[in-house]
Image (tube, rainbow, N blue to C red; front, top):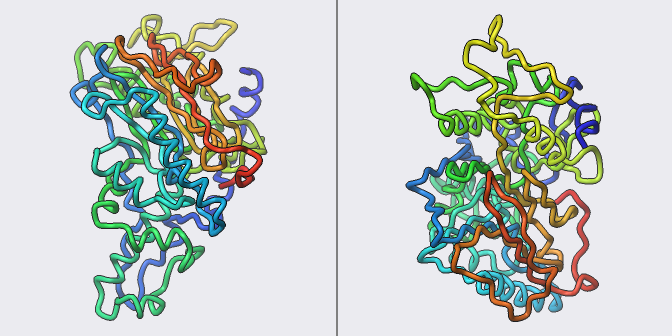
Length: 419
């Protein structure tokens, strides 16, 4: 796996493939003004939110549950057959939480985005999530709805901006009136809108040394060598502390992955990426290039801790001198990433990356990754052996993967790997 990754590490010219895919908004598409009135930034990104030990209690009495893309917990279609599936999927959402023995008074539930659209009960899902203050991140489909609602709010604030006059106002390129995204954006309540605005692009779970994103994250800039001084994991971070403890150094590096790897600084990438092409391009396509988790796990396997890299003794001319060993060693600790968005790949569990979008919206399964409490056990009723498995998580935790079936694959909509 490492050799395959190293083939793309030194490549130059990294860019974003399809940076404005069909229907996806990008800040570059937004006109700067309309009739002399400056347009606001409809994206309204919250780049990253960090949860500390005070925010996220991970003691033995509580569970932490990550849930993959639920896409409204139902399938959107005008056909009565898919309306029936939609009702089934709403039941599946409740069934998954029941089998996990989820207790909202104690446990923490975190979703990986794409919680609305392509479903007949988007508003019902938003009602439940916002009422229970459920944590999560934005998905690419959520972002489209959020930006449309931002446009509606902006237009409505102007004289002559009533519903019947909306068509007189310009819209950014590749936006479309009267589609599902526009419809959900128009009818959702102010509470729903506020909840979506609150969702960050990345959620940093400091006690678990874990990052949650919707689509993907790169551990380094693939256009440079792993040992380049510009790579956040190739040098000890600067921390304002005379003798910084390990946990502070780790948190600083984890934040730097998001803030300093150039490809990660573009929110579109974290909302859409699925692979890295041969020329180093970050792409939303799943059937081309190398899946980004391959690089993530290879780089995390290079992490060798901080003990063998002293602050001053191993530095020369501002660069960290790495020990000459057969395998590259980096002064870092591994970071776990949890994500969704890749229904085409299905469940993709690796040591340091956990992909949990198993295509419930396409009739397959809904998946939860659970850090269980010591005294809770799953309900056995209706579960099969393959529905529950275990995987290492973070430094020394064990997570359980719980899957429940949605509908028969033969009746479900197909997935083309780009949605």
